[in-house]
Length: 187
Figure (cartoon, helix red, strand yellow):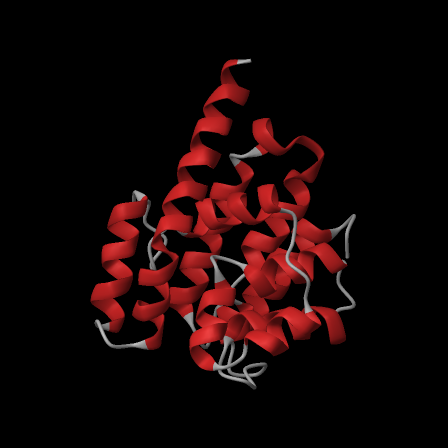
């Protein structure tokens, strides 16, 4: 999947998300578009990041959701059915501090045993794209996105608890990626 991955990733995400989950599909489209803007920062890794951005939420698709934890379900589908690139699978599995939510759900061992963490700079770049894009594809700053997540799920939900624990890392990753992108664009 590595050399044709962006077109294939887009088509795969559309086939899994567009009809059953149109709002999730809108979010994935916008995260993919946001990833394309990171070309000045990522150079030859841009294609990999864009593919991961398109695919990061495919685990929500009813046809492939098995554990109820979308990062694992999506990454397993990519690995087992699509025979996707290992780093791509790892990006999907670990996107947006997924290991913290996996801990909350009692799935951390499964996640970390099956999928090693991806390179930090790619994980941070994908987190930046996801956490600056709202659930319907609207651009948000990271603080707005965090508020939106808490509002959508409620304070006691596992997602909110996880995001609360992950917030320092999310803020740091978004800031570092934004600053690196600004430097890359001005170079």
